[in-house]
Image (tube, rainbow, N blue to C red; front, side, top):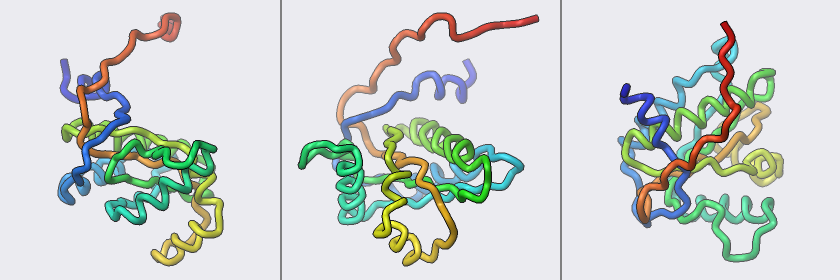
Length: 175
């Protein structure tokens, strides 16, 4: 089977990670794959912010936990030490779709690198908050961006999850 297709068929969401950062050169390769994702009219609206700083990662995790309404102490990033935050410029009518393509490329690239990943939602709600808009401005990121997702990445702590069976009646072929 083609290696790229095999990668897509075997990638699963990982929800338990070792406390070991991913090397910068590996993150750079994963991010490059994300930047090559398809985008409507090739507008390339998504941006990716790689976060390896534990304090910042923990602040984002806490913000995400609050939006999700989970009990104190729950980590919605499942212990992943690093994350790739995807935001997209709202000026494009395709920004959410473009961001979704970026997220998928990131997760497939992480899997190709032997890492676990998982798409964590609620970035939209987080980045509507003034604190996080100010944080973006402090990074020099201007414009009206929507949070698409957090792609957590890291070394899985445990066996790779196996794919469940596929639901029937999801494929139709018309000649």
